[in-house]
Image (cartoon, rainbow, N blue to C red; front, side, top):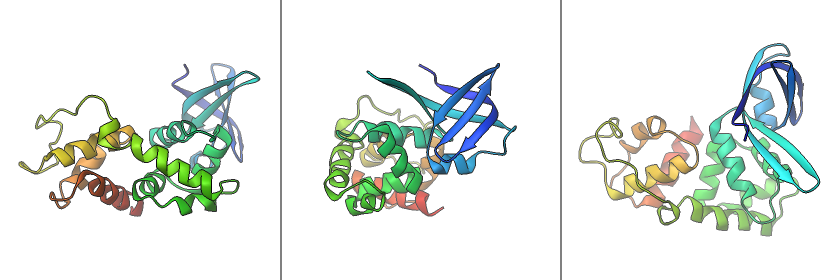
Length: 204
């Protein structure tokens, strides 16, 4: 499995970036948003990758951030959603907006992407909502003070802990979400904490 590629950007097109590493050019299919974040031809680029293997083809997909890669993996896990549709969706929205749409159940927002119909959009929300719920997560996040240093003492409720786990499934780090979680109403349930955190991140 190729975790990432880092080297000189030698091709930059809509939906495609080629990064040369030690004389080998890695062609990465990608979203328009990742292409927009890359520098000029000849500059150094890093892409987090996913190797997609099927009977008739092997394709490498690359993304500018771990969050976008995590969203891509979630999307292709949905029945009927292939890498082409996944990159099209991520070309139309940021990872934060994608996660917020799923958490809030706004399936209609996905139909704005070409090729995504109402039934497919509903399936995305239905299948992925379960994957970011606390019930679908294995293990637990440590309650040590070091893990939740940015959250005020006494504010680490079970709902906050479960929300932290769900957000980490989406590729966010504790350092990114802890300051937001610490400012939220601690009486909210897990799903509302997730939705509010993603709303705030999407608005940045």
